[in-house]
Image (cartoon, rainbow, N blue to C red; front, top):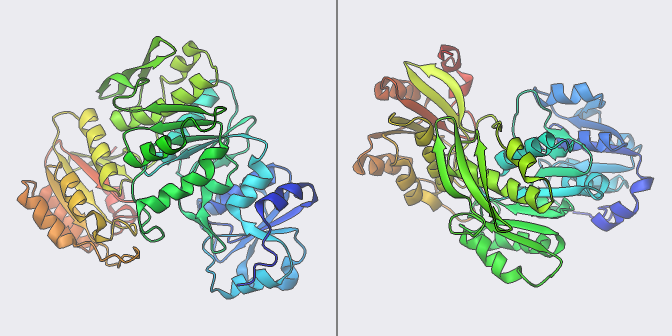
Length: 481
């Protein structure tokens, strides 16, 4: 590895005015594409290449007018025309492409560094981080700021109907700030490079077992940014978040710290959640403020609360914030209604961590009172495929009335971890009183759904991919509106 031409964050910021033409290598990544568009909107000439171009990212990029090339068109002479090369995280440090980029003589960096240096440095950036709820909370913040007539910029890591995944905006910029590393040469969390001015921490538990050996290593990533931000809003229900709070609170008198969650002075308090919304109160400067919102479930109320605290801290009028919170949309694949199958209500959700499963199920029970829940769970992330949460998955899934484990035949990449025993998981869930089966093929999954089907129940599908191909099969066409 030759990092002679890797440009540092400080140098890139200092040389911003000298950068004219930027090339994104592997531009179709979920973060790379939106970042490329933001860099273009910031006034730079942007081009990019990838091995293949598929919707929705390809169509999104085409609408922006960014010239796109195939990777086989990219060689050292081609790359020399650019002032900066942005390298996607899908490029391995052992790849020939990495050696080519390193030796061409053009400064190169990761997309989080390019984004932080070229776009976000002058913005009031709100980083929304945490094990659960990042995407949803970033979307909540964006909607609230829009309703307050702020024209916010944003980068949201989920699919939202009728909305581009990124937008430059004006003063405020809400960005989903995940813990995953940035590039083969930037083995640090993306949010460390985003030039955050504010930090919301919705939750903090062990995850990403393929790159972190324990939760303490994730905490260390936050230790880099906490001293640098102005406003910090932490969910106090998570021990790791409170450890960081106790280590840093009060050390910098120019910082504003706020805790929310159960037992906090701010709240939310008096939470009541119904089929079509929730009500709750927040305590702010000796005033008890009532909020009514379309969000359902304690977890979504907590996510919304973090955004409301930020807006209150920024001095927006309480009445305007109350009005803005009334109607809030959800990201796709977050408690998303997909239709009816054999009279069952089908809900699609991204949950793939025991705590996420629990809070999702709580929200579904609040929305669909007195209905039985039949849950399909596909453990597909590196952490979920490992034995790390074997018992926790058992306990969270046993809250369903029936459970189908959709086992992907894929070994975990968790550091030092063994594979999740899906058959044992199904057996132990059954022993706790919720009939459960384990399947590994789409045909068997379809049969299990039909075997477990009950009229007027909820079929809850938990997967951050396709659930053994279910969402790419004829099942989708069979759903009724």
